[in-house]
Length: 440
Ligand SMILES: Cc1cc2nc3c(=O)[nH]c(=O)nc-3n(C[C@H](O)[C@H](O)[C@H](O)COP(=O)(O)O)c2cc1C
Image 1: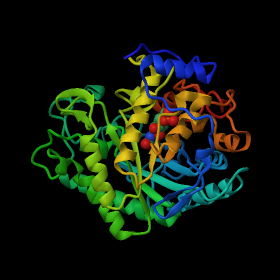
Image 2 (image 1 turned 180 degrees about the vertical axis):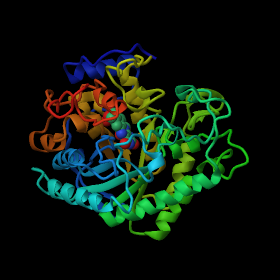
Image 3 (image 1 turned 120 degrees about the vertical axis):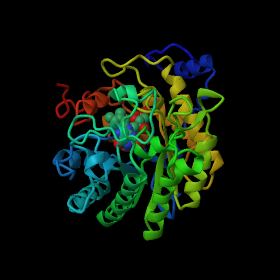
C-alpha cells in the first residue's frame, strides 16, 4: 500500500500518471455520453446512469417523520437530475435508530413520507435536463451494534467481536439478540417495505452493509445454537427470509439490498474476508449471497465496503479524517480502485442485473470520465455519488448541460458531513452549504 496523500491533481494526465505509478486500474474516457444513456432496471427505465447514494442526514422529527430540513435536502438532490435517488438508512422501529433524529417509517409517519415522495417527484420534474422520472428507493435498516435511539449507545449485537466490542467497552458476557428478537426485526422490515410502497417509493433496499444489524449477521460465524448464524446458510437466512417475504407480499415493488462486499473485520468476525488471510477481502461468499438475492427477486445490485466506525476509508476514500480519526495507511486512489474492482466483479458475475457502483467522490471533477469508462465497458451500470452529491446536488444537471463539473462545487472529502453525523446531526455539506450546516 502507498502512503496516504491529499488530492492534488491539476489535470487528468497527472491523475492517470499517479494511477500508473501505483499500478492501479483506473479506466478513463473523455466522452461522458455513456452517463446519459437510459438503462432498464427491473422493468423500469432509469433516465441516466447517475445515482444519489444513501446519506443519513439525522434531521428527522422525533417521530421519525421527515422534517423541513429533510425535505429541503431531498428536493435539492432530486432537482439535480440524477436518474436514481436512494433515500438514506431509515429505521423500522425505535430500538434500531442510529440517533434520535434518524428517519423512521411507521404507520404514524407514513403520511409524511408520502409528502416527501411527492415533493421529490415535483422537484425532479423541474430539473433543467430532466429526461424522465428518477427511480426512488428507500433504504430500511436496524442499526444493531451502532444503535443510539436516545443519543447514547444502546448496542444490539448478534455475535461477540474482539474488534468491535471494544468500541463500546462491551463485557465478554454482553447479551446477544435472540432468534425471536431477530425475527421481530425481520417482520418490522417487511411491514416497513409495505409502508414504503404505500408512500410511493419505487423500491426498497434491505440494508446489509456497514456493520449494522443485518450486515453484522452475515459475519456471525461464531454465533452457535441459532437459526441465524454459523454456516453461510445460517448467516444469510434472516436477510433472505426478509427479501423473499417482501417479494411474495408485493411482487411489483423493486427490491434491492446494499450488501457489504467486504466489511474488513478479520475472519471469522467479518464478512467477505479470506479465511486463509483474515485481513484480505475475498468475494466468494458475497457473490454467493448476491446469487441468492437475485433468485429471491432482487432486481438491482448495490454494494459497499467497510464499517464507518472501523475502517472508514474502505467505504469512502478521503483526504481528511474526522477529528480524532486516523489517517489511513493507503493512498485514497487505492481505495477508489478497490471500489471499481468490486463493482466490476459483481457486474461481470451478474451481467443481467444492474450494479450501482460507489467510491467516485474522491476523484472530484474527473469522476465523470472514470464513471463513463466503467459504464461503457459494462463494468457497472449505474454510478453512485454520496458525499459528492451532498456537496454538489446539481452535478448531473451541470454535466448534462455544460459537459463538465465546476471544481468550485465539488466535494473535497473533508469528512465534515461525517463529523456532523457523529455529533448527532443535522448532517449535510458544511463547506458548500455552510449557511445551513455548521460545525458546533
Ligand atoms: C455522512 C454520511 C452518511 C451516510 N449514510 C449512509 C446511509 O444512510 N446508508 C448507506 O448505505 N450509506 C451511507 N453512507 C455511505 C455512502 O452512501 C457512500 O457509500 C460513501 O459515502 C462512499 O461514496 P462517496 O465516495 O460518493 O461519498 C453515508 C456516508 C456518509 C459520509
